[in-house]
Amino acid sequence: MTNFAKKNIWLAAGCALALTQLAATAAQATDYNVGPIQITAPWARATPKGASSGAAYMTITNTGKTPDKVSCVSSDASAECQIHTMTMDNGVMQMRPVEGGLEIKPGETVTLKPGGLHVMLVSLKHPLEQGKTVKATLKFDAAGSVDVDCPIAAIGAAAPGVPAGGGTMMMQGGGGGGMQMNKP
Image (cartoon, rainbow, N blue to C red; front, side, top):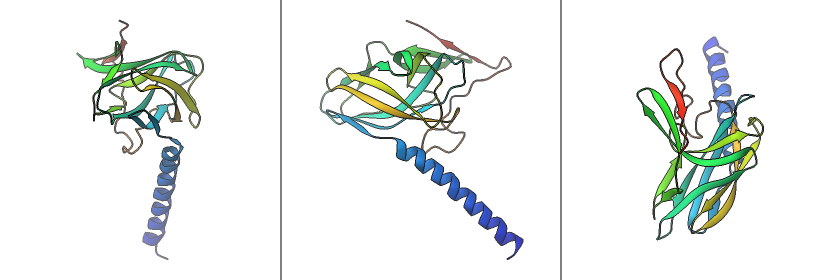
């Protein structure tokens, strides 16, 4: 066997392993339905020890004929659970709670993802550990409440289905930017 063939076999084996791990993470996620609301691909990121907050992500679709609003009412891993928005203002990341709930219009799909809307887990009771799950209770004004289990991916993991390095919330150091979490 030539060196070229051996390298290709190792490359193929490495790709197969990476795809298997990605599929295993995606397979752990469960989809949820509550009334006309569909919740797909829930997940969270692991946090370092000592972190005071964490985040969870998912896609929410309203298949109904009327708008609905969602809020996060509790989590097994944190003292508070909120839907947040994230924006950049003059190089400073600002996160704010979405007051009164996040509206999802009929036929609309909203993706909660790194760098945008997300479930903020405030005052963590313990670190979020890769390979475990975090439970969040979401309340919809019309559809009702649902408990969502979010599989926890690695610290800095990309969203499922996004290439590594894509769809991540990056913190800049060395004076290049910062983060600010604003309370209402």
